[in-house]
Image (cartoon, rainbow, N blue to C red; front, side, top):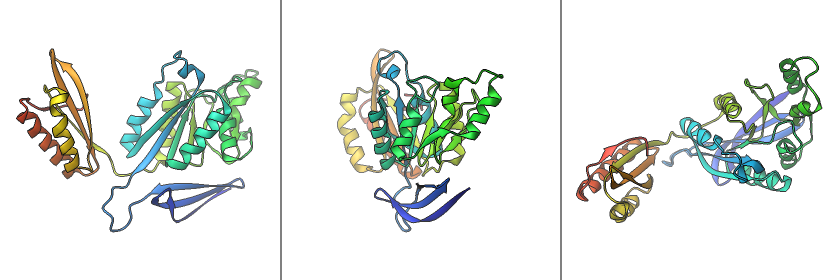
Length: 290
């Protein structure tokens, strides 16, 4: 039995709709950022990603999940503001989970929820939230339905250990579920499974104002445009600006990526950037790929 209690509140330093989700005797504060009435500031929802595993830090495995998650969250109006990689050390995982969940609306973890001894993410998340962990009946049922009779051994059954009060995240690829507790989504590290789990949780995420983007490119060296770009940023402090140098056609070029929630301000900044490039002798074009 679960219930949801909503009230006005604050998450960090920002106004929020605070929802107290109570289930199986445990309660967790969920926050959806909202815009203060009469305030023109955009509604911003942030996320962090926590990648767990020695294999990432050793260079044996290349992480592919961060790129996917950043793109999907952008589509949902959620800004991925931070990403960390930590080893399979309980203290490091617990500390990172607690730090990130306190400073962001959502935290997504990847890795460490498999059947082996070094898959300790579920235990660490339970410790971070101060709750117990045990085999969850529905998680066990899903594994029993997936494996042939006699194949659900003790190691595989470890994947049914879920922290108390957590909700399962569907895994249509290999059945072993992830879980959500509070604002933390715990998912597998295998890219195909991670992506399937993101698809499972995406409909339940609350996004902020969409972040719009334009990319202006010209064959002008970055060093030539730097001073004008700085002045443009001061003129449009509400537009994020990034400069990315490259060589195209044997000549130095610069791509300026502009991002904002206000279409009119974004377009005005892009028009000004076109003018800067032309004044410096370049012919600007636009492309979404840097």
